[in-house]
Amino acid sequence: SQQGEEDPQALSIQEGENATMNCSYKTSINNLQWYRQNSGRGLVHLILIRSNEREKHSGRLRVTLDTSKKSSSLLITASRAADTASYFCATDALVDTGFQKLVFGTGTRLLVSP
Amino acid sequence: DAGITQSPRHKVTETGTPVTLRCHQTENHRYMYWYRQDPGHGLRLIHYSYGVKDTDKGEVSDGYSVSRSKTEDFLLTLESATSSQTSVYFCAISRQGGNQPQHFGDGTRLSIL
Image 1 (tube, chains in turn brown, green):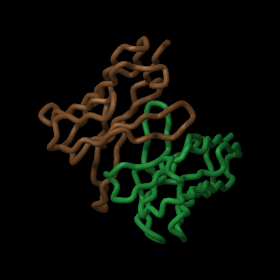
Image 2: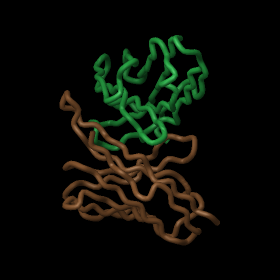
Image 3: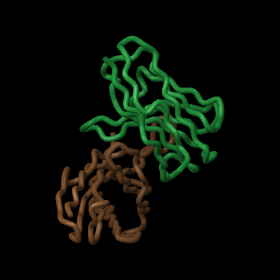
Image 4: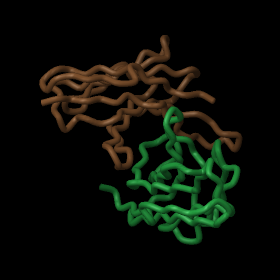
């Protein structure tokens, strides 16, 4: 089934540095979402970008979408230790019943060291 | 945080026993979902609900059943648990359909011995 693939699988940086993670997907989408998951917690929605948008900002987050390359990137600027988490992209897909579901990638583990 | 409570948070049980996980929401959202999260697989959809008594299968529904008798509660049942169902289970809700932002509970860690 269609699935977002994040790259890299793990990323380790120092506080204050920028963190960039990428997501590639296989088929056309209506939107793409990014989620954060802290250890032992559920996923938290960060940002949604529609297929007709190229870039979107939310605070220190910048998401880009290139539908021609079927890829998206999440940039976290001026990283903080509190940004340490796993980050997942999610794309939409149809199930047999016509319902649109989210399909999650396997995530990028980000470690931000003080 | 969105008002989603999963219970229990941790459970250890034996192969062959029935297990029911509960998801309770206070947001009055129409859509509810059960996922499992396993290393190397990301989150996979087990079942979803689009209203009271309206449920359907996701991509990994074998061995699982669900029920939704009230807007706020969505139950996931493993009729006869197997070791392959050892996982972390997440409930999610959304106000609008399946490709809109979802809000997640903090998960149930289920171990089947």
